[in-house]
Amino acid sequence: MNKFAFISVLAICSCLGLFPSQALALQYLDPSSGPFMVDAPGSTTPKDTFSLNEKPVVFLEFDRDSLETRLPLLVGWKWIVENDTTASFAAKLISDFPKDSLLIWGQANNWDAVKKVGDWQVETSWLNVGFLDLKGGAGSKLINFTVTPEPVSSLLYLAGSAPIAVGLYRRRKKLIP
Image 1 (tube, rainbow, N blue to C red):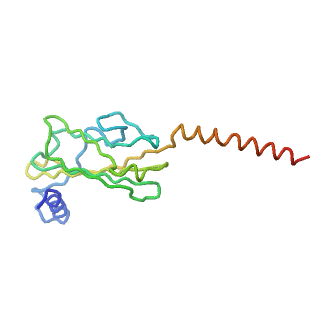
Image 2 (image 1 turned 90 degrees about the vertical axis):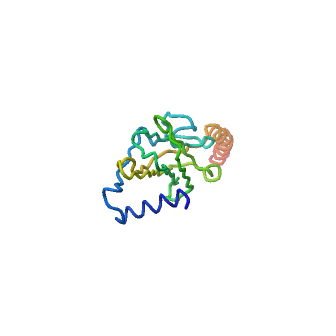
Image 3 (image 1 turned 30 degrees about the vertical axis):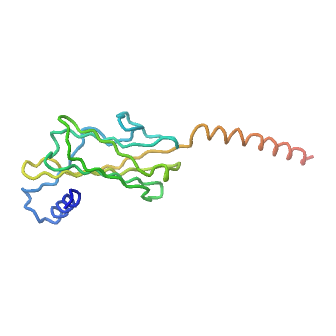
């Protein structure tokens, strides 16, 4: 059975109460930083407005001491556009934990196909279930960000519209005696 299926079965069993409460305690796992939006993988500087030519990325950091390192950490991102339509879903299964903190970046793999101007949300969820020492847990957070038109596109629109507006104004002025 693959790791994702194994974790899914464990989560469902714990929710249904099929394990003793002492053996599996699903508690809130608080990241040490994030989740929040950044402009590129490797960046940790928060950003909430992006242009159409940028690719938004979610950043999330966990302290190693809060994780159950004998089991993988499952992180998922659901990208939601203005009208509550899911535009993309991505997930990572992490089983190789660093010595101090775990830095995670996630992005929509189909961003170039779904990007559009407007308000967006990313629902970030994580699951790392601990057994004996009650480490790990689960959590979720909704992040909002905005995609704006590119400044160059806006300037070109205004530059192209100005001669049309002037022509209409002159034509109207000639028609009114």
